[in-house]
Length: 495
Image (cartoon, rainbow, N blue to C red; front, side, top):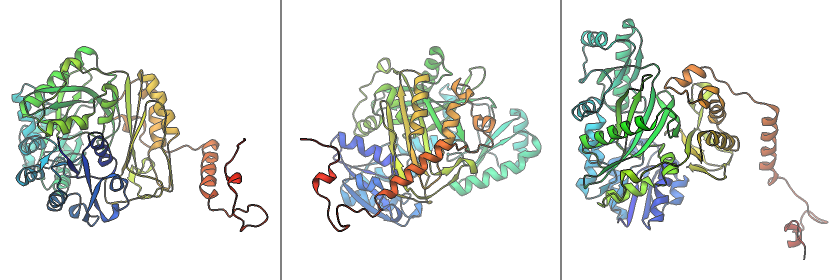
């Protein structure tokens, strides 16, 4: 096993990886930009290396600097987390060239699956059902119009490269096709340096179901059950749960076999996620493979007891998987809510700034993977995720109750967060009934605004009062200059 691992990321995911490394006796190295000097992942690591300016290109996306940091600190492996360089084939290849283990799939697998058209063709050869659509990119508007007529409206324009909802447009009529294609292509070119696009059928009442996979270098592949990820904003997930309320045991088994087939067809190694769309007729289709650890991996860990980061480290070290498919089973129900620095009442725009006060929820079955603290200045330079609140309970109803209570006890002052919005979503009848689709927010919460009650104002006033209590001048005894005795500071006591 590795003696030292560099985590090429920041915030809560860097801390998450460090937690398992500490359990395994592995020293950790953090990297950080100038604006992250006081970030909690820097404080948690055994060593930390400053990469430079806040611009991601000068820090968390700078391959040369990260490789140099690994060399300088004697790190044997690099864990990329998610985002930044986690799905960058060039970075994985560079690690291999430099003799540093990349904790993820091989570079050629990342490259193949990172291009959605190539991935579609791999899945077709592997007998994995794919969404009706194009199997090659096409820049000619006339050809795109012809293909769109064959596929049928509504359809989705998708960037061949990248992810995170960039380069995606939904088109309902032929008149909107040309402009939407041009817009999607420009956005993809800006985000990924690749403006190629293609067309797929769009399912208006679809569910987004993904399966966690693990594969070792010895040819063994298993899936670690599914996650329901249909509640999304701007094509990005904000609430995930497992097990999915949409699947019965037969469909779950069938989709699990398809996920394993997808991993085998692509030559996958390490942890990854195979994503599917499930239509109203319970027909499922391959969507994409995320070649990294997912943001929502904690809910899988909660119901299975499997540490996915530990599995990643073991596989990267060349060890065979110790898990058997028949031994993997879920217990209870888990939900994750992503807490961002953003304003859901203003189209989820980022809300950077100073966190004046934070109190995390605690209790049985409550886990908060968090990368911030009271007084931390949330920068505008990076993804605005602050934490991932996860709860686990014996069934979905109890899990929902626990999550709602936990969100109500989660206090973050000084910046906007979606906590009130998340509560409203979870308390809504459609969500309570499991009637979630990828258009859930647009359908049920298109113009959401917070609703404050007097109790909320009273709580805020109390918190502000408590925050200011230590700043007030206090007098003790006959003079304000008299220091308090131990008996005056102990509180209630008796001999």
